[in-house]
Image (cartoon, rainbow, N blue to C red; front, top):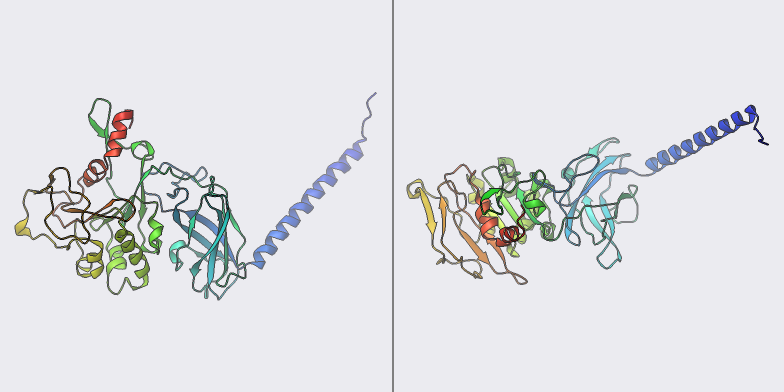
Length: 395
């Protein structure tokens, strides 16, 4: 025998459930609004790692945009976008909480902005508008971390915690090429197939099946202000031919580069520590030639080639006779020859305390800068890329 609930009782139950849902939604909205009134700033977005370049193997599932380049257990910059909820005249810092490689919780606070005075409610501050760049070294397998904007003394929370649940780390063997000033237009790598012929090594997302990726920084304000911010990079490329004049002025001009001296010092310190760097110069701006910083960046004097000394082809022997800033670890195994349009004229190798890494310097050429200089840089100097391809037979 089935007992049926009267229709009025069922209707009353539906009304009661709907009323309860309305009350819960109202309480949630009220709590959220109260929390927003309580804090002065909201973290609208956060990106961890160097900005992705033209070739990236990881994309965001929601926006379908390339994800910043970061590797596990390496230092990486943190770019946050802030939204003002209330006026706040003081300075702010970013508190970063994550897990290290040993599974221990770590917490660090980095300066973010010296003052937020004059910022009205509703205003949004891009990462390039903030004065400093925070950093994180996450050892968590999923990259989970918590970001909170706090006061400069760290005693007051200025924003609600912003949780990052997952970060797609690149493999440690991935070769990352970081370009400064441009996104390296026309960049490509040759691929050796099973028959031995050279074909294009470009895939839809990355190079060499994801083993080579690019990152690009086109704004000086987004450059790391600490040398370890480039730790994810295996090669840093500075192009004076395709980089806009404002970028080079902000980086090397005597007057305009004053607000960005920390960025320049971080780049030069990264080079001094034995990092791989390549200077490609299709045209050399006068500010770059005259500044003392450019001489610090290059191990050999940066002198433009006169028109009378230019020839159809350049070549130099396998052994160098000049004086270097540091003793070379080895000489090239063969003579190098460059065509007239090749932007790389001279190279030098340097010693690093922990492991040998190479640094490159270049001179001005007459070419347009469109020749494949990367073939001699990545393929010949880093033979493991082509060797692993020839053994596996994949691109």
